[in-house]
Image 1 (tube, one colour):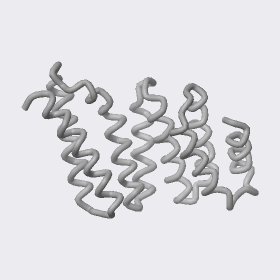
Image 2 (cartoon, one colour; image 1 turned 45 degrees about the horizontal axis):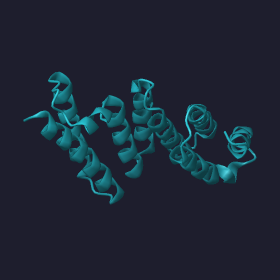
Image 3 (cartoon, one colour; image 1 turned 180 degrees about the vertical axis):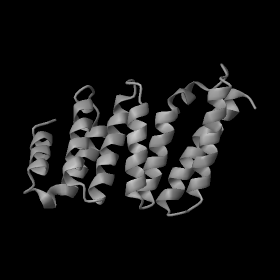
Image 4 (cartoon, helix red, strand yellow; image 1 turned 30 degrees about the horizontal axis):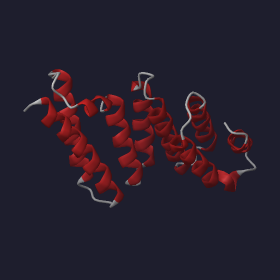
Amino acid sequence: MDGRAKGALLGNDHRAGRARSHLGDERCWSDLDQAERHLHRAEQHPDEHEPEWAYWMDLAESQGSRASTQLAMGRPGDAEAAFAAAARAFDGGAVRTHALYLTRMAGAQWLQGHHKQTCGTAHQALDLTDQISSQRTVGPLQDLVATIASHKALPAVRDLRERIAAGG
């Protein structure tokens, strides 16, 4: 199989898994497992003929995709661990994606009742957004703040809300 085909399969399997997760379809897991097998093969046998768009699918993106799927499937504890693994795998170049995954990780923490930890993770995402200008990262952070507003009496929540209201 040439690099273009491997890259296409990898991207399609991840997209299929994410789409299925939003439908509550358990087949999402086999899609992600297949995508991870493609990623492993691609890492073992790099091919200069991969499509140019395939560069973005690396271990961090793969783990983040799995974490997002776990979150969509109602598994916030598993999602938090996978988002943490994705955060450790980022190389510093994908700042927007890293910030998005940290925001989703904060959401997973919130769902588990880890309120202070949620705010700390959201602050990490905000630190990254200071490096870029992207509504795609600010919007989910604002959504998170709306979600946690019911606990605005908590100092950590109050600090986070004030920081976001001040523009980061």
